Amino acid sequence: MGLFELALQLREKRLDIEEALVEEKKMIDNLKKEHDTLSKKVKIVATNLNAAEEALEAYQREKQQRLNELLVVIPLKLHQIEYVLFGELPSDLSGSLVFSNRSLGRLQERIVQLHEENSKQKRLNKECRERRKQLIREKREMAKTIQKMEETVSQLMISKFGRVINLEALQTLSVNTTLEELKIKKLRKELSNVKEMKMWEEKIAQVRWELMMKTKEHTKKLHQMNDLCIEKKQLDSRLNTLQNQQGNAFQGPRKADTEARERVTELIQVQAERIQALKEEIALLRKKGGLLLPPIHRPQENE
Image (tube, rainbow, N blue to C red; front, side, top):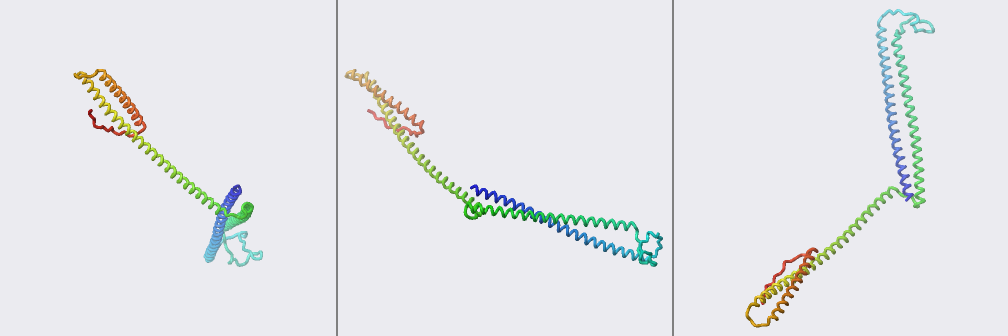
């Protein structure tokens, strides 16, 4: 893992160096373009200068020719005459030219300016050439550095894995491995969800079964309570009948009637206790969420 990280770091450095080389190439191209532009400008300036000089010369020639056509008397002093031949003034001055000092001074100043501009362009061209040479040297050094780093990475890969590994393919494989792991996690999660759903379905079925059994038991208790209520009514009716028969004139031992009445009273009390117990049990089933069915009334039997 450490070698892989080192390879990644070296690759990042290589990419940084390549980016720097690209930037340097762009700078070199820009300098070349600027140099070409300046060279073109110099050529254009030189062409314009030549054209201007030729036009000026032609104009001066034409002007001089026109002036030469005029016959004008100009008084000159000896120090103003610079047209000498073999150190002496020629006898014929028809081929000489009369020129003002101001015009001559302007032309001389323009010549000096053109020399200065030409010197500036030469210095600029020289700087551009030096910068280009420097960039070419830096490019060569960068290429050597990249080559050394690639050799180092290759040696490390060979020492670790026995061969040179394509890092781009390795990264692609790593991405695919991560995707496969995510797919496996997804399948496991789906299986877990299916098992959990099945477990909850079984729990729901069990709870429904228990609820059905509780409902049946509750219904049975209601039927028992209904039977006891009917039996209680019957006993109350019998008790009332016995009480009404006390005033009638019939022969029979009074002690037997009293005992029978006591037994009926005890039976009614027992039935009332059973009814109360059933009511409490029904209330408990209601709290647990059981379903209650209405009591079934049986037809009352008359004794």
